[in-house]
Amino acid sequence: SEPGILDKWRDRRFSYLMPLRNKVPTYNEETKSYVIQFEGKRVAQASIKNFQIIMENDKHEEEVVMQFGRVNEDLFTCDYRYPLSAIQAFGIALSSFDSRIARE
Image (cartoon, rainbow, N blue to C red):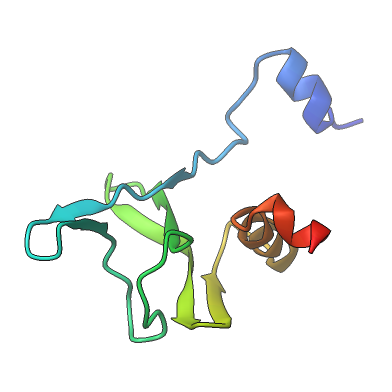
């Protein structure tokens, strides 16, 4: 039978993994803050919760696989694509909120 994910991990066979990471924001001298360029116009407000997750393609270029950002005071948007599933993107988005929300 085919080895499972835990078997591969124990044997240090990591070729099945796809490294993803947060895009590092750049410092904007004009606003004196760190910013991330979002594709399109869906993310309309600056927020500490805004982020992008990227992966490197075969040409060593960065590709955005998920972006999460504030649209207005009470609304956020989440865009994702392969290799993330909807449930993975939703879990990542939820983790960006403070755990105190559950206690309110």
